[in-house]
Image 1 (spheres, rainbow, N blue to C red):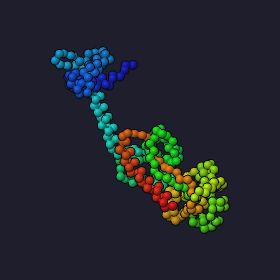
Image 2: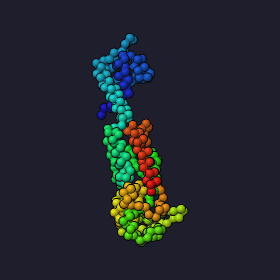
Image 3: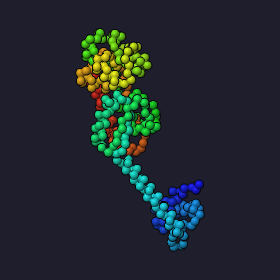
Image 4: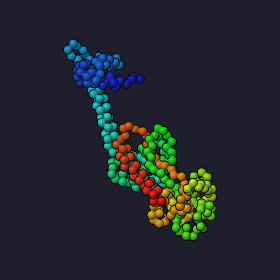
Length: 306
């Protein structure tokens, strides 16, 4: 199988064909005359033909040289177009943008922000992935991920978005007919709605002013989604430990309220995670500048409201 002609040599030959001078070709490419000469000799060796006729006064192309010059010019033009295409991509806020987040975070905080963002940049094609599986921005082809607690990869950029706090919530309808609830130990006589991982982690760990309570849970009803858990609590099933951002809209509607105030789970951080790139594409810059401050404000607002 014959080898591909070396692109660098073809570009040097193109410069010579356009200028008809080794000196001028070297000046055009910012290299030495010897580089142009060696490149031409390499092509002549590869093609086993003479490409250039050299005289003391001028340089002229053979028939083979003139044919090769057409292909060399096409290579130069293709590379120039490639550069313009990529630079244009970097400079425009358009094209696909894929974001990964948990279902609860996507529903409660991210989706309304992305609606605003998409209306501002109509040439973007936004995809929000709320699969429970943790996505890797590199291997899964995701532009941005929202992760909580830890990032887990030093090769990724992580922008801190704020903190979330879990508190205990119930509906007014449930509390109207439920047993007393003045201390975490009273939870044993209440209906508890758990997320599956809360049972697997050994229950609820609550703290208030230095006092710590570790509560083992025995729940008849477990769900693997904060969104579904919050809906069940609002419907009057019982008590649940929920992120404050999930409870906020239900509290505003009057169908949920915090109980055992002051008894909180440890706060945990959220991060915007994405692959390192320099410089960042314009659509990345636009996304970060628009989304990050809004998420930060929303997380802080849900902490303050509760």
